[in-house]
Structure formats: structure tokens, C-alpha cells
Length: 444
Image (cartoon, rainbow, N blue to C red):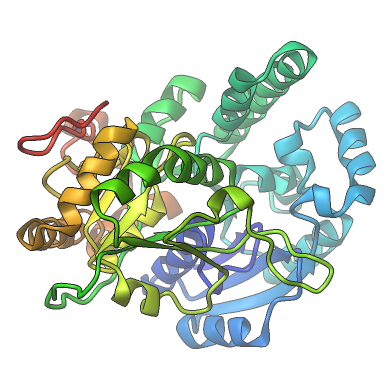
């Protein structure tokens, strides 16, 4: 089988949730003996470093790269492209989440690749890239199109609309309706839809009447012995331009961090991630609201291992969005005890006090952090349970089984056996609700 994989950005270095998911998808495709080769067609906003291309070549031998092709991802940086997106919104009726990805360069490369390689499956990674699905279907009638959904994308516009008032709110509500219509149509067009969580699978069923396949994020890890840290130190890793991340970090620094410092005056926090704006000299600009005593904002880091090694716990204060939080799985993989919100734990069958700690109000979140950094036994318990969770829910064999169904290599299980075309938790159940740890309220 030959697969064409179409995605929005180069997957390495895998420093954001989207890239981590894409890199895992490609690794999973490569792991299947039935898949002989994969063509990767992707975009880039800034030139992709040669070392990143080398990393892809070393890790993914079956993958052949086309591009990356320049295309603006953040339109604020490229205002000249805004009229094109507006025109696409007006004439074909594309919502913003689709129109922003339309590109003559990408279309030209896609047409050449499809005609030359004639793939058996076209795997469209991210909803917006479904703008290219009609041309693929015309060039290869009957080709199997798979849509990989990282989130319920239209929810982001609904969440934005809820925060606004007046004209902006009405425009956002209109855009939400357009986004939902495009999302529904795209899922119905695809031969198979991949969801990242059972919660998203249920949302897709409600939205479009389709049964998505839950392909678990494949996570490889090495168990290591936990050692008590000499000083309490937290680490936060995430894309620092993505609104749910920014909102969560703002909430933590303004409402939670002062309470944490009162309880543990010596504690420190490292904030690591791409996406910060840069000044004329290329230096990353750190928002003043994050420049607080004890907090160091490192910005982009090529290697996360040193930050993980120094950390006592991993933070994931998330207030919105959808889908599985890849950063939680990364925290588990790194063997770090983790504190998050209910929104952060959404979509994962985890329980507060077992694999992690969950809280939504500042006081409880701060108490969880303070308790965790001072309790080595709790640190050991959470990390061991998190490792067990990864082995159980995110192992290679489980992900391969579902991906074979997605690619049409094996028939989907019948509704009668409880799978309904998606594995979910493995027993057809929904994720368990995050409950409070012993002796503490989760504030949810």
C-alpha cells in the first residue's frame, strides 16, 4: 500500500501537540508491514532546518518528503494574504479554518504528486486541509480519503464567540456555523475519520452522524527510577501562541502562582515552548504578565530532556480546546508527576489521585502543586500509574489494529460487538471522570 499524507506543517522538531501527533501518525504508518511507502506533503511558514529534515529521514525511512511548501500559517505575520482568505470566504464560501490553508503552490504540488504516485490512501491530517479533498477525488475517483481530526475544530470558534460581545460576537457565531457545516461535510466525505479521544469520537457522531476511529496516540517510553529532587521545580511545555495554552498559562501565573509561592517560597517554574513573537533582532518577546519571581520563560528549546530532568512535576493548566492533550501524554512519557485541570484531562480515561492530580479552582490547584512537590511517595505513585496507563492505552499493537481498520486493511468491528468502528477505551466505555485525590477537593 502507498499512502499520501497531507499535513499543515513539518512534524520535526516535535515541539507542539500537533507536531507530536503528526510524527506519531507517520511512525505508526511506517510500522505497518502492509504500508510500503508514504509521501509526505507539508507546509512551512519559516524555512525548515536541515537538522529537522535529517531527523525525519533517520526516523521514518518509508517516508519521502515533498516540500515543505511555503504558506502563511499565522496571518497576522502575513497581512498580504488576508484579502485572499476573505475572497475565498466570500466566493467558494470556505470558512476561515479552511480558507487559510488554500494555496496555489500546494495545489500544484499535490496534483503532480497524485498523478505521478497514484496513492491507495490519501491521509488528510487536520480538518482545514480538506479543502484539497475535492481535487483529489477528481484525480483519483474512488480513492480512500482518511481525515485525521486533532480536535473538534468548530468548537474553537464557538468558544471564541462566547468570550466576545456585540458585532464581534455575531461575526464569530456566523463563522462557527460555517465552520461546523464544513466540518460536518468533510467528515461525511471521508471514508474514515480518525479521532484522538473517545470524547471527540462522541462529538463527531453527534455533529455528523459518523462513527470515528479512535487511534490512540502511540507513546514509547523507558521506565526510569524516580529520584527526589534537591529543589522543587515545575515545568510547563506547550505552544505559546495557541490560545488555550496562553489562557491557561495566564490563569496559572496570575491566580495560582502567588498561592503556590506562599506555600512553597523556594519553588521555581520553567516555561518552555515555541510560538513567542520576536523583535526586530529575532529575540523572543516574553509577555510581562509571565515575568514573575521564580518563573523563567525559556521559549523555544531544541531539547526538552534537560528541563524534564530538573523538574519535580509537570504543569498543564488548560482552560479550553478539545481532544486529547498531547502534553499530558508527553508529561507521562517523561515520567513526571502531573497537575492539570478537568479540561486538560478531558478525553483520557484517567483519575485524579491515580495517574495525576486535577483541579479547576486556584486554591485547590495550588494545594495540589504544594502537596505534590513535598510528597515523594505521591510522586512515585503517580508516575508508576501513568506509565501503566501508557502501556495499557497507548501501546503500538493497539494503535496498529485501529489504523488497519482506518486504512481499509481489515473490516471494522460490527456494532454488535460493542466497538462501532472505533476502539475507544477498548470496551466501548467512555473515559472515567476525573475524581478528587484522597483528602483533597478537585474543585471541579
